[in-house]
Image (tube, rainbow, N blue to C red; front, side, top):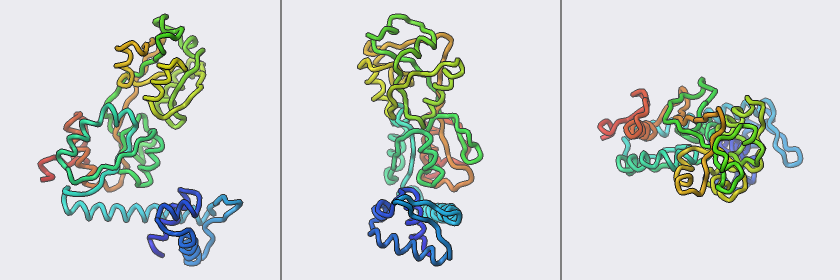
Length: 310
């Protein structure tokens, strides 16, 4: 059994086809098929079945996927720990972050990190929190900066980074723009533009309205808060966005900030790391910079200070 074959097997599960798995590893489709057939022969069982181009994993196949993930992750951990022995002169850091944090909060941290550790390559993935957590759990990311709360505290350690107000917004020409304070029901009468379904922020906003027995009239769902902001400016609907995103536009008059009676909204952004997994020195170095630049309260085991890295 070769680790390379287990990587092919994982790619088949993640990508859903032999062709896509082959592209991931820069090999031919027949090469993937041959290796996975050998794997099944070695294990003496059928791992997956193909029904009308859909790949379905058997119970033994699901168990094999779990072990494959663990073995591939162990290899990554081994390589990272060996690289750590060479200090912080080179390496790679895999960070997942929501777009708001990458644009408005972390740039100074990234800049300072590059100054301290110019040889470390930063690979940044920007998405909603839940997809990032899946990649974190699967070992594709070292750390995540995402929206809280995170419910599974057994799999993840969570540390608060900052919190911010969420602002209801409308175009200056919208009927609600001149009303100042509005009721939740009145706000919900109009088309609402929000984040995609896997967004923690969207879930939080919907839950606040649901507690008042009100459903928002969602007409568009987009990942980018800048795109949402511009659609609201164009008069296509209302939205609720972080204060950082809309502050300048409200000040310039291209957006109007609204108040919803009795409804104050804030969201918390946090640092999320996997519990019980080796944290490479590149990640601990970044966390040391984050701690210095933003005053985040982190335990010493998670950070590398500038003096220690020299």
